[in-house]
Image 1 (cartoon, helix red, strand yellow):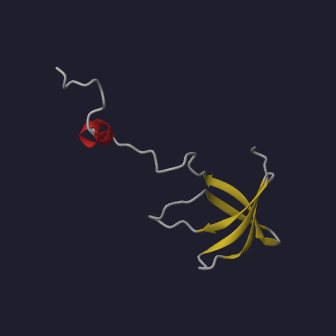
Image 2 (cartoon, rainbow, N blue to C red):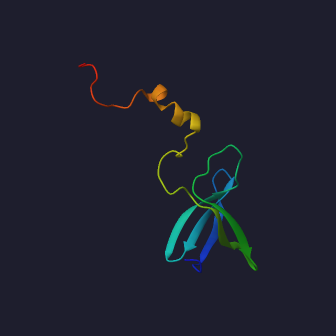
Image 3 (cartoon, one colour):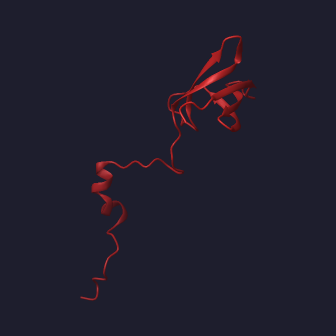
Length: 102
């Protein structure tokens, strides 16, 4: 839903003090987690969000999802033209009828 409320309450720093522990209220769900700054070269776990502190209550932030998490579990589904072209060289020929009987 576009009008669904999405709010985070900052509960305090993470044990390593490189992030913040948060409670997220999104629609009818409540979840607990951490927010951390993006670091180049490090994988992203979860969503990329922009937090906008509210006037008079900076520990309460409105959430804007900038990039949603992948829709599937597992590694990225990426294949290059070279990978597709050289499938048999990498994995061998696809199984087919037994040609050794000829």
